[in-house]
Structures are given as structure tokens and as C-alpha cells.
Length: 195
Image (cartoon, rainbow, N blue to C red):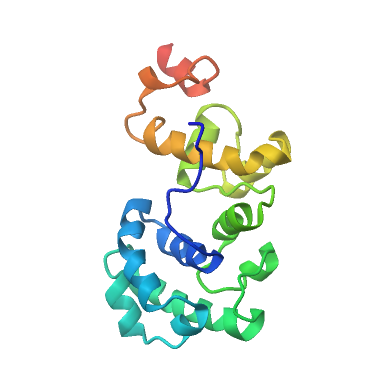
């Protein structure tokens, strides 16, 4: 996958932050269906911070956990305006202060927007890294540490997307497409299945 990049649609750091918050436990495809209307109605943190819950909920109700995500989006936009001058911050510490933003979301934003050498560990990265033997970690943080320790800094942003896309389209959770995988020669899970 030479073009390893996010499948979320966005035109600004703020829009990416909104999309990643919405993507928790939800597909990028669904998020991309919701965000155009959300971006059009609330193009800036200032506009979103002034929104009502009902206005935001109506636009995000088809994503998972729409109640909490609508609340988080409004609170996140308010905090961006109050603490960060309406700009998306660039550090773990600052990003994770924002409602709806955990370590994974912070890492995605830092990697894509600020080109920081971090790896976000979502369910796909967690599964693929463990299956192919890049990590034995039993938590997302442990997997992140293994990947960070063993992937050169300049490759981390691409590696994050490679692992996500591989998990999304090849090394799927229920029925991995091992016959279409170029990593079977080094995959621990494939070797177990073959035996």
C-alpha cells in the first residue's frame, strides 16, 4: 500500500480532530458520511463551541455513541477556544486535556497534522502488530511502546497507516485474507495456523 494515509476526510487540523473523535468505535466510512454537513454547519471551533447539543446530535446521530460524542465535540471546541486560542495543540499533554481525546486520538493528530514520530494504536494496529509478531504487548500502550522502540522515527507515521490499512483490508479480525497477504513469511499467526 504505497499511499498509506488516513481514510478520514478533512481540510484542517480542527476537522481532523473532529473526525478522529467521531471515529472511536466507528468506521471511517460512516464518519466520512457525517462530517461534510458537520463541517459545513460548524467550520470553526468558535462555531462548534456555540452549538447546542441538539444541533450537533442531529448531525452525528448515526455514529456510535452519538450522545457522548456530541457533548465531547462541543466541550472540545469550547476548550480549544478558551485555552488554546482556537488552535489545535501539538502535544500529548495538551491534546489529552480536550474532552473526547485520549492517547490514540492525540497520536493520530500529532502524527498527521504535526508530523510527530508517534504511532496510534487502534484495534487494527493492536491486532496486526501482535499477529505478525511486532509486539507481545497485552495493552495498547505496551504495543505502542514496542512499535515505537523498534520502528525508526521517520517511518512511524507511515507504519501507523500501513498497519491500520493491513488490518482493515487484509489481516481482518474474523477472516484474515492470508492468501492475499505478503507478510505470511514472517507472520507468527500464519505459522501457527499452518501447523
